[in-house]
Length: 267
Image 1 (cartoon, rainbow, N blue to C red):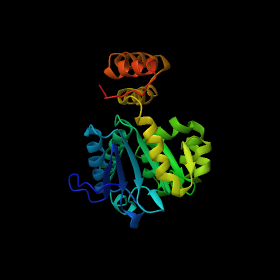
Image 2: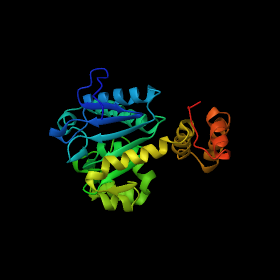
Image 3: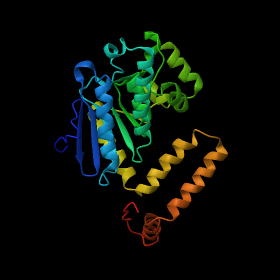
């Protein structure tokens, strides 16, 4: 990777850019990369910078060390909050997850270790999830007398179905990477030393395509899941029409007919 970039005084996140890829790594290894207020703010700052940088076409999100992607919320911080503060906290976390999901650029999660609670929720907000074979997943909030608060009750059911989601949430059980793959929670499981390379390969393949088409495809899937099939189809038609009016569409179709690689410019 290239040298670290200091974006608005990041303290808990390592943020680097290499070519057209932004690398965002939560860096709190002594607490297994637990999410606290500072971490959420730093992640937001880095991701907003990646979103707004026209030279960046995709993001790889990871956690430092070899034990945890993100182990969850910072329990020490959480234990002292009031009901009003808890609602503010969940909204802050949910806004971060919405930012990840709706970044407009693909975000690939490199899940190197445990992804529990807020960590599992962060992974679920990403576009693609690739896990080390030693990664583990879970929503253990019920064991603390709580429920998932960063979107877990909503995104987990959308990814794996209502029944499996409820079983995981209500039991608080932790599952291994292979089980997460079986139920559709992660896209791939790889050897630990292949994790970053595989994420880079996936991202490169996505980003070789038209950037506006990638953006609108993500939007169509994400927004379409929130409504009926007919509403989703109507959205798809509108976004298809937007694509058809772009320079990228002209370039893509011309390149196909001329049997050459397209040179997309995101216009």
